[in-house]
Image (cartoon, rainbow, N blue to C red; front, side, top):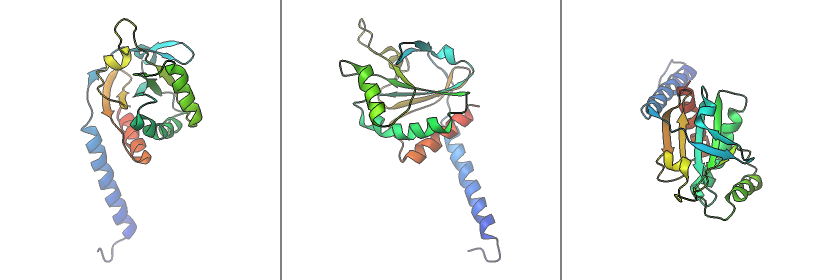
Length: 182
């Protein structure tokens, strides 16, 4: 196709062109919405809110054990958590919500343990008065899995719902979103 030209240089140029188009496509999804100052509880019972993570990039993943696409997305999320485990500026909150079982905390913990997933687990339990899960409701989520990437100033920069597949594509997409928040 390119006689007399260096094939490695040609391939590098194509790769760079693809990377720029990919980043442009992700940048086009960037938004600027104030995130609600939600509250959730970790599995030890400690309540946290968005303001506890000021200055950090926060990735929220609303999920449930009854949700097939949620469970299918968790291995990719484990890859992402492992990738950023030494980066103190990026935090992950896996928020179990819309529970359908009597003991949702035990259900969620058991699911993660039996599937070799080491993810920071938080609970968004139904408010007995309103019968709604307050954190997921405050984000206006209509379906799960739902992911939000929030910058260090508390602005939602990216949001997505559904399953991105394969795992490597999900990791790449979320990595690009996280890096745009720096």
